[in-house]
Length: 328
Image (cartoon, rainbow, N blue to C red; front, side, top):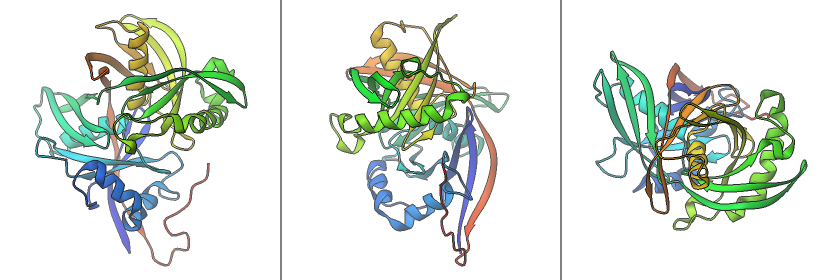
């Protein structure tokens, strides 16, 4: 009987299932991702944990693996119902909280502790703030984010629209929700999924990473509503429709980095300003540009993650549903 222990967190309402007991061979996190994509044994565990009846169509998680070198505390392979992603900001925030709360990384009870994590798109740092021995927030510094293309015309079932493409560890197409007659609200949920899938697949082949083809491909569509400004900078509400129709309940960490690159390039986000990025369920990330680098910007995205439980999932060899199924 297959048996897997997990620890579950949520970041801004988006689940993250942490698995530290699966061995994935490889010389680097990126090569381990390649192995996982082609290994029936490894992917069987992903399917077991992400599919119903143990997961659901919007489940998310990761395998904790060794880092690329001794400078990293650990690495991670992010996964969802359709496979393995190159980046995951909400997962990085959850992993930072998990590493400190479990004692995997020793932390000051009052102050900031850096948790260094190797992900497929590069090395990121989760800056975990504690107060009175309790994690209060996590801000992750991402790989360089940059504008890839502007003003790409896309035909959808709701008419013509225009997308701006940027990279925040993965490629995202940003589209004003109003341009397709929608808003980032639960009432528009089904239509946002449908049009988001159309845009993602229409632009997928155009998202080519400049140095590593393994990072190519359009990961998702970000629909946004511009809500004006707050005291410290711009305020927007967004939803990321990623993979093949999955919906991020959080404001999307890597997607926030991608949005920051666009807003900084537009002059909407000045030095020292903070983006208040809200999600479709009302949770919030705070995003800022901390430096310019490699033709783009280094971003920091701040949120909070909370442990929701632990579990041991098993697969009875007699079970005719096997590793499960997914209904959308």
